[in-house]
Image 1 (cartoon, rainbow, N blue to C red):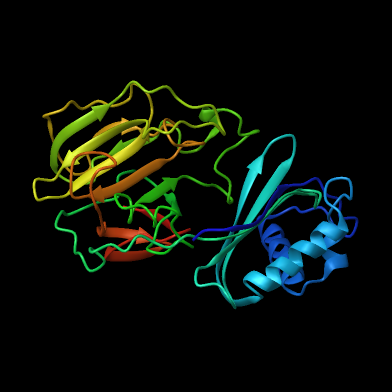
Image 2: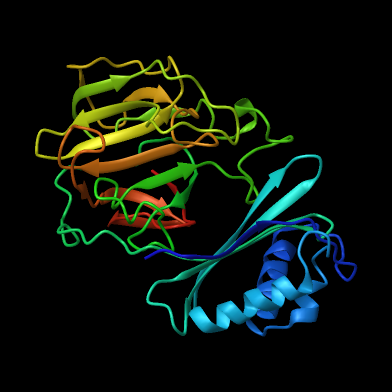
Length: 325
């Protein structure tokens, strides 16, 4: 069961904090806030809150509920910082941990601005991963990463703390990729698709096969908005029981048609922001049927790529890795 401990948008003031200049400083701030939270330092934590938005008694009650449900952090799993731009820079610190009394990892988010003001605080348990029958499956297709240049794995891996697709039957082993620079996905204020580094970049066929489905007419989303569709997408039949799905493509950019044979590495579309997507990026997954939302996800082992500067002969990209062919 998934249950939410606390999700509140907040406007807070920390007089103690210096201006955050680098992403390393933001990462350290997120870790310090996590230490304060785990130490149940009510006064220190509350110094970041405006009383009109969230009272000290509410915070005290929340920490008590935290004690009674999951307890304290037992084991750190992973964390990261993402930088964005609006009227000023802001940062989102995401942390995954094992807690004393929780069977599933706990997800904590601290969002704060350059001046140290918090705008988001979230603590929730993660749902269970889908119990796939294909955990030991070995990919038959000679897969390559479906893009050019350096991309960051936003979601990827086999556990919920690295991949928010893990609970889905058809997308159990899916990936989300984007391009980042200094932990940021965009330049400027990030309010338009064209400001995102990944937007309009070429998307490649992940392996040889036949195009069996194309959607090319879904509109592009405004940043921060999304629909409940896969957006524009291409499905490749690798003719061995494996089907590649490449989603959120730019409207009108798909340059292949159903029935067309493609080679691995062939340009087939451009990266967009369509469907169930709030910012430009690429969703990729492999499954055992050509019907979207109807099939079982299969592990995608790509061949001969680089992850964080190291050559990988055959492997599955993981959360937060920077990868390229």
